[in-house]
Length: 256
Image (cartoon, rainbow, N blue to C red; front, side):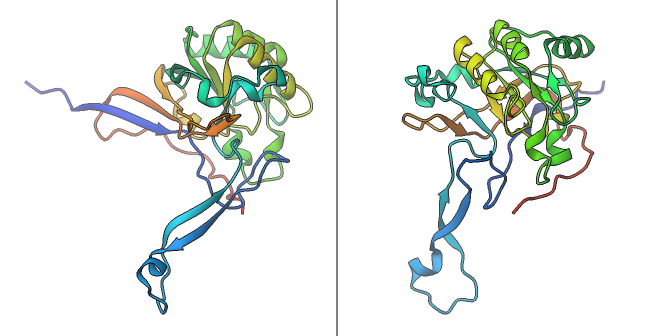
């Protein structure tokens, strides 16, 4: 009798790394990571050929890299709903990922596109889900002039998602809607219907075709915060030990 192979949880990292000079949404604070103090300074060593940081200084905005928006970011009337007041259950949910990779630069994702992607994947949206939208824009455009011209959801699609009573949706792009077309209004819909979104996600291609997963995207507890960087992950339970998600495709250019 052959025993069953060892089963374990598989974690897919969905977060960008944070580094000096990385792309940020236009008008937001640039990112600078500098050394505050070195081990050599602590130890009184003045002639070392190697200087190793003991503590770094981070200068960045709340909406840096892979991050989640607080409800108070959506519009001024929601100013009391900061990131530290939002329930942790919004950031620890079940999740699905939909394939919208046929969408090109500045294309709008409409409700019909979401319904078609659900049907093709054989999935359904459940109340409280996080719905991730794979467009492959990160691998195609990160670090290029097209980075801020990605596809995004329409106002109607935002309202459609909100009406499914999801906790959040997530995108690879630096904004959930198309800039100067739907982006501001998408934020307003999120505030009105009480759900949120993640931006600047990576590795969503590794989730396609794999069904439901546990999504975790916990924010920092910033008092009065309008958002927070997150280390977002997807967890698949019951995978064979040592198994890995499919890989492939171009490696994005590193800015900075």
